[in-house]
Amino acid sequence: MTTREKHLVELVDDAGRAQGETTVSAAHQPPGQLHRAFSVLLVDPEGRVLLQRRAGVKTRFPLRWANSCCGHPAPGESLVEAANRRLREELGAEPVELTEVGVYIYYAEDPATGRVEFEYDHVLRGEFRPGAPLLPDPHEVAELRWVDPVELAADLDADPRAYAPWLGGVVNRLRQPSGPSAGGPDAAMTPSGLPADDASERPGGR
Image (cartoon, rainbow, N blue to C red):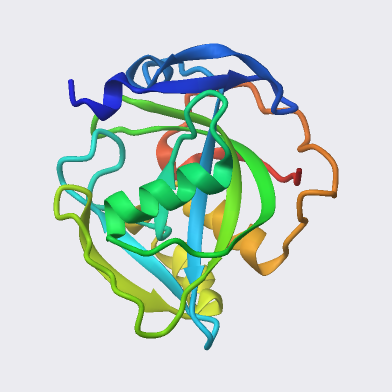
């Protein structure tokens, strides 16, 4: 087990209220435990978003394209602090201004590793300054690329198995932000055992 798999995450209910804590590893074992997470999309001045291809050593959805950075805040840690920490660790990025654009709950099983994602996911938009350094950690990131979000949405429909199952929801929140004042997300769907590319999600904002 890697060190990160031993880190603590915050368990939550369907409204995002804290319900305790467990390790990353335990939260992602079937049937999964709903926990707080975040997904960052870095956006450049042209409106393009940065995608990363997850490294082959990842325990969940390796070698799939995903958003710029993902992670879990430690219990009691702010989203901004946690997200900038992971941006530094994964991408070697400097701190960026972050805005929450929505929340959604999703559930997906990774057919390759047997792990489960069951997350109350805060979607964060980060403003990327042209020329800012990016030094991705090869143990975290296999590749990087900048894409237009409209073109990305079309490709997600055409070739979903190339992407992490949460990316569609993340991109939707970016394109149609609900913001932190729009109320809590709808009730989470009961874990259905669906494969990753049929992942269940419900929209929301908080």
